[in-house]
Amino acid sequence: MSLPHAILTALLEKPSSGLELTRRFDKSIGYFWSATHQQIYRELGRLEEKGLIRALPCGQPTRGQKKEYEVLPAGRAELTAWVAASEDPKPVREALLLRMRAAGVVGTEGLGAELRRHLALHRAQLAEYETIEEHDFPPERDAERDRLRHLVLRGGIGLETFWISWLTDALAEIEGERE
Image (cartoon, rainbow, N blue to C red; front, side, top):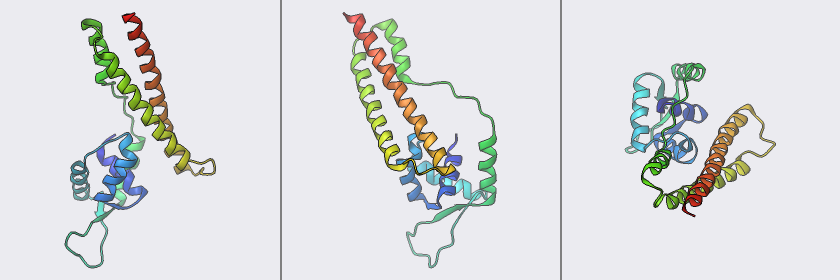
C-alpha cells in the first residue's frame, strides 16, 4: 500500500482537511499504514498537482483557514485500479525476529525482558482493537462498507493474537534454556 492510496481512501470516506486526515491516520488508518503529518501534507500537494484531488471551494478565504480536500474522478479511477492490481506479499522485516536469530549466536542475555515488553505491547494493542470492535461493529452494522472495515480490524486482531502466542512460546523456550 502506498500513502497516496491511503489518502485517497480516507478522502473518499470523508472529504477532510490535512489536519483532519492526520487525526484520522492517528486513530484508524495509522494502525496499519502510518505516516507523519509532514508526509500527509506533502502527499496532499502531490495528489492535487496530479489532478487526483482538489481543495473544496470555501466561502471567504481567511488567513490560516483549513483547506478541505475531495477526490476527483481521476483519483477514484486511480484508487479503483490500484485495488484491482496484483501485488506480491512483502517479506517480513521484523527486528525482533532478527534479535532472536542473533541470540542463537551470542546468547539470550537480556532478551527475555524485551520479549516480555513486546508481549505487553501486543496485549495492549489487542485490547484496544477489541474495544474498537465492540464499539464500532455491533452485529446490526452490516453494510458492505462496515463489513470490509471490520475485516481489516479482524486482520489486526489476528496479527496481535499471533504475536501474543508466538511471544509466549518464545519466552517459554528462552526460560527453558536457562533452567
